[in-house]
Length: 251
Image 1 (cartoon, one colour):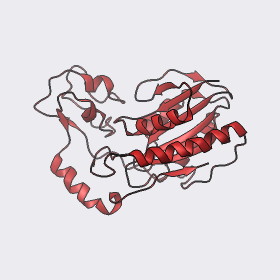
Image 2 (cartoon, one colour):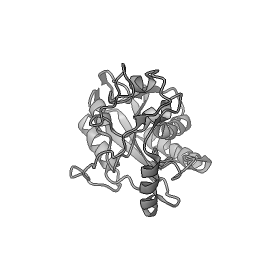
Image 3 (tube, helix red, strand yellow):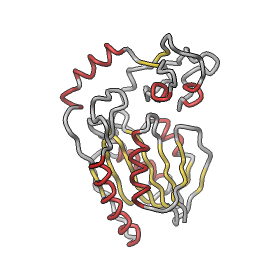
């Protein structure tokens, strides 16, 4: 039996949630980082996978779906994790469930957890926090019992199957500022290859998925989106993004 933590986490929030759960579940975990090109894998019914993605406009990021399709489930048990930035996750969990079941996984449980918004960082700032960690750790204990029992029925959770919410695309495309040193880290680690490695100041705006990974990774803090535009949009979205949102746990 092998344990795999399979995650798409451009700015680290999704991986924080995944790490809390894997520590609580115990044992050794092999990581599969979907922010990078992954090789084909074939799993077995003895394996356990924690599959963690952020919610992008209420959907699973398309590149994560593409890379998940290189993995054959073979009856492996899957724990679905969707991380949302204090709005809603809409059809993210149900889409992830549909993809994994099509690939031969057995979906055993699901989590929709809150993490700091990747763009409007004032929303859900500092989450997952200590309270979130305690809640997720308690859930992991119940999950271990379910896995040991070996009985897996349908997971009842919100969201549509098949007829998913349309994805509106990412409106914000980070650009290099005058402080760019041309080190190329952003280009090397962009999940979709949207930044020219020879000239990191050049961005393919059609390919960019607005994941904000380049901003998070830049050692010179030299990538950004227009701060005035971000502030105006954040203020407009306050009714949707404000307040304290809960984690949702499905066994």
